[in-house]
Length: 159
Length: 159
DNA sequence: CGCAATCTTGACGAAAAAATAATGATTTGA
DNA sequence: TCAAATCATTATTTTTTCGTCAAGATTGCG
Ligand code: FES
Ligand code: FES
Image (cartoon, rainbow over all chains, first blue to last red):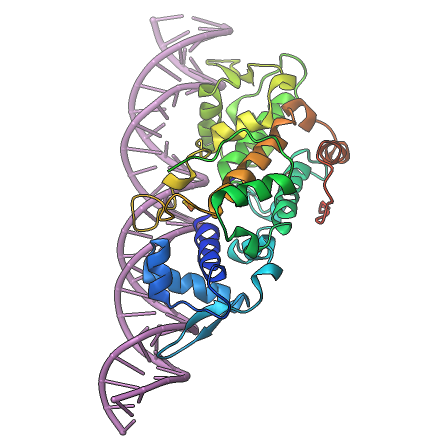
């Protein structure tokens, strides 16, 4: 269970936009530089995010990308859903092995776990807004732990 | 954020062994048939699970695989960790874009979320044992919801 | 022993995901 | 108008993951 490259980079690009002063914008080369990815890659990611309505793009000189909606209104669950190609809900259609559908006939112990896990993650992400990711690592970490009072087993790694 | 093929199929193979009567075993062709995957694929998965110490293999005629430890003692978090190539803990070493490491200098709002999410999932999985996955879908679903009292937004799909 | 059933293991090919490249369209401003 | 800056879109290449294959090793049985 891991975060895909698209999810991670896409999210990071949005955080850069959210960190801007009100009404600010960034060009593709700027985003690419800030996140350490290629301009082409940033271009594709922003294209996806634009199609999904998270950002607004302006062409031509002095163009760039800016947030379409207030960062306070954008939940991480929405973002991930777009960047992850809507994997939710169709679990037993993928991973079908050599057959056309899941082999477990009607009664399966795996399915509720897989579906439950996705729900768990979505639930956690739906309680965090883009705006909350702007700020120091310490404050974001504190926020996450406050919202989901889980017992952390992995410590944030220093740089 | 999704489950990989290895995680899913590996887990499913283990559930088949766990569903066996005490001391039972299955051969590769049997496992492959039960899960609808190829024998070769089942072979590689079981090899991984054998290396990790979850199962015990016997060669030769009348050979096969059986659980090495009681299903009640095997937590899903252990299984996933093995099948997922230990992705935990080294987040800022992957997804480094065109550079050698993460660009965010020492203060990053993404990192606590990613690490927190992984902790959240691991925590959830650590509370479920392999033995609990054996049984009807309804009972497993009820168990999952009891352990993690989350508000389910996705319903299990019928077959 | 000698064969058949079974697991073991590394190499190989196919498929999916990710990243890049290439070409086109729009806007601004000199 | 024209050129430069910028985004848009599709195609291609690269990388990673996944699945298969083939040769080998071990065990049980007659
Ligand atoms: S029916 Fe889909 S995993 Fe069991
Ligand atoms: S420092 Fe690794 S994602 Fe920000």
